[in-house]
Each structure stands twice: as C-alpha cells, then as structure tokens.
Image (cartoon, rainbow, N blue to C red; front, top):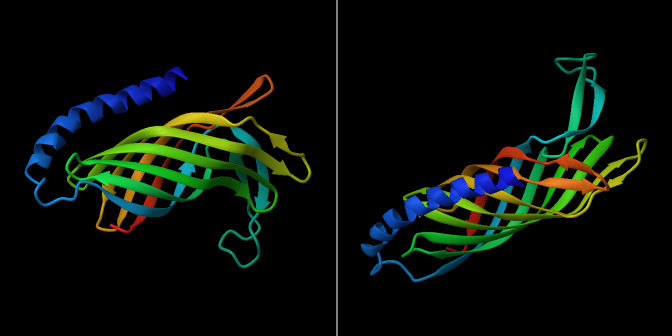
Amino acid sequence: MSKAIRILGAAAVVLGLLLPVNSLAAEHEQSESPAMSFDYLAGIGFMFGGDTIATYVTTFPPGSTLAGETANLDVKGGNGGYYFIGAGATWPRQNLALELHWGLFKDSVGDAGRFSRLATELMLFTELGRWRLGAGAMHHGSPEFKDDDLGNLEFDDATGWLVQLDYHFDVASIGVRHGNIDYELGDSSLNGDHWGIIGTLHFGN
C-alpha cells in the first residue's frame, strides 16, 4: 500500500503543477468551449507484471516457424488483456475530465489456465494540449484463477490505484498506465502490479 501511496502522491504533485497552467490556458477559451460535455468510451489494453500464478510448457504446432520447439508461458497476477466500456464527463474550460470504466481483465494460456477479474475504475484527468495525465482508483471483483487440473483459486475482491498518461486524438486516445494492486487469499497475497498500453475510443463529443 505504501508504494501505491507514493505513486498516487507523485501523480498528485504533477497534477498540481499542471492545473495552474491549464487554468490560464482555459481563460482564453471560455467563450468558445461548452461548460461540460459527455461521451461514451470503449477500449482495450495489454498489461504486464505481477507474481506468477502458474507456468505452462507449450509446444509450437507443425507448420509454424518454431514447430516442435517448446516455451514456458506464465499466468501472472498483473498480466492480461483489458477490455472495457465506460462514460466520461469533460470540463473544457478547466481542462479536466472524469472517466468511469467497467471491464474484464484476463490472462490465459489457451484453455489450460486463466486468471480473470471484473474491473471498475474511476479516473480524473487533467489536459495540456493533446496530452492527458490521470490518476484514480480501481476495484477488481471476483478475481479467480481457473485450471481444470490444478483446481481453482478464488481471491478476495481488491482495490488499488492507477496512473495513466495519454495522447489524445480527435476521437481516440492511446496511453501508458501503471496499476498497483494486491489480491488476498487467506494469509497469502498475490502481487498484481502492472504496466501496459491502453487505447480508448470516445463517442459523443
């Protein structure tokens, strides 16, 4: 948790430095910008990191470049694809945006093993030109590892912190993010910290 506080604190410092600059820039645009706008969101991300839950040895199929070769593939607490939808509100005069995301965060090795969790995120962004810096909270519900041979592990719901830096186009944004979260199972803890890239489509501006 202390690492999460440090990350969030650093994000807050940067946000604090950018907000006065954004406020000055916003004064010149107040007559042209709406007070507030809403949009809908859909996106995908790919994350990497966390503790290893299970390792699988896989063999590349015939006809592939590495046919017959084997590789070790891990299911990790911070790995996976993140698929989400959401809604956002933007205050152009203040260069601020608030976004709420709902999605599925899942890592798998074929049908062998998979670790999934249902994600809810709330993030506040400050904008400087086409760049956006955001920080917020995430809650992962029903974190569960499933393996038909090893059995299932059902972790407690978990809450963590996020920081994200985006470059915003007209109807889309692409960015990098860091998440800090741990999953508890009895007396054990699984680290789910991750880094990754994320792309978002914005509808309704």
